Length: 253
Image (tube, rainbow, N blue to C red; front, side, top):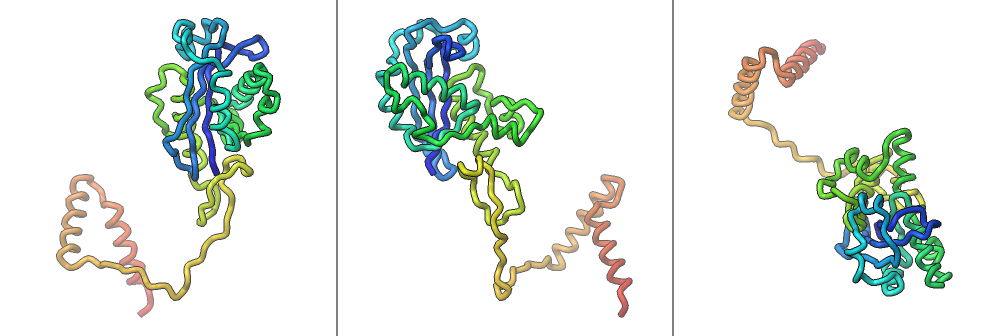
């Protein structure tokens, strides 16, 4: 499956107040691997960027003066995302703005993104998995150990790259008793699905066991006694060995 992790930045919100997209960032994922392909563009919105929005993403009116308008990139952007599974954090926000941009161009056939792409909302997925907790992108990075140290401000491409890492981490662990390891798909909302346990053949070759020789056993014992002296207590390894020895002695001859 081809997926596109997508994020946008805007002049403000909501879209119903005439706000526009000023940055689009996308990264491509195929077979749960980042391919290195991406789509990134800044856009001239033909309106002022709200000061509150600038404080979030740092994109100023002056910076956008010479950038293309959405109509200039609409076709190449659509071709990049068409037919893909779109992975978006808080998808309603981004999809609403993208639909609006196509509608403003009179491209009604593209103004309903869900007609051309499947959409997976990682915010809804995170809320389902972690109810009652913070599920912002930064919170998920912290929860799943994803490095977002370069994220002082929001940026569409950077956020898409971070979200890709979060999504792959969030859906990559074993979440059920499945040894076959089927990956996530769109129909399961990004969650792994239970698959049959694979049994190994009974006549398979025995696993090779390399046992310690006398010299290695002696060195091990010396090391254990040194640890015992340093720690002031019997190491767990020696406790287990003694327990096994006692059990063996208790067995009938």
